Length: 424
Picture 1 (tube, rainbow, N blue to C red):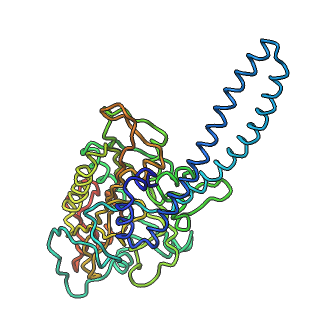
Picture 2: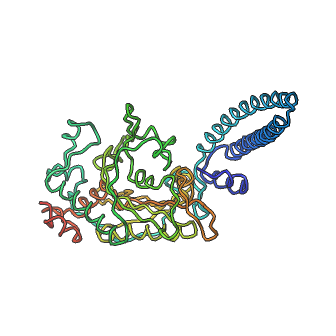
């Protein structure tokens, strides 16, 4: 959630940033928020004046009663009763207008970082780095949805039988590949100084609000309505919410956590060739890295996290590229996002396997996540997260890019995790 102080003190910057996102009516909505705040402050001042007058009268009444001036005291008591009624009315108005202000603020997305390019769609994203050679496959090479049938390692029909479309069953060497990748990703995170976390995969409404999934993405989340819990779309939600309503000692920064969880996304309306097989699922596994950092160091941290993810892709011997997302393609809460995409040779296209984002103070403001700076003043922290990595499209690319007429060769880095070097 954007800070009200930013909208008041840096109005032009906020309007320009939201315009870069192609956010409609940015100027009008910010003006409306500032007008609500003016009304709130006017009522607050009037309410404070009444409370001050009431306190003053209470002292006067006490003195009058002590001196035996009961008649004068009764007159002031009548005035006090009137002030009490006005105070109650103003307090109710203040609660109502604060709710109105809060609801208006949560509708605004984050302001993009100055380096975010303008644009409306993924076509406008900026390719800032590319690594590795695109593999040339043998004649008759298959996409991964055919390979998994040929080698009997992932079964979509069984998943559909048990649950529904988008819930595959991994088996045999497919299940072992999943486990190997999870362990590899977690081991690399531990080497990089992250603390492993195993969080709940159901979260409450406050957690969904804290990281920005609610009220923006409730239609994309699975909702256990009776208990009002949500299945997590990513481990970012529970891991970041570990620090909700906390003031972090400065000497404990940065906080670096990593966790493996299943992730659940409804993906309502998804269809077509681009979402075949493992390209888009309702349930999938992911290792997430999360950092909480001082504002002055957060963009240096973002680059460090991006490099960590790239190192994983290099060790998996996958060709990849790094995109800086344009204003129109960024997530609601992000100030700057890098997407990492691997090349799928059998499909002949790039597949997103990671998003790495700096949210600046947007999540921290919702979470009330703060620290005391050098001057002793309490201020908001910056939150960051990245997929390191999401498994489905990584598995798809490994299967497709490493296939031969005899089998599918596994990346060398995984051999010790797998216990085999090739799927035959």
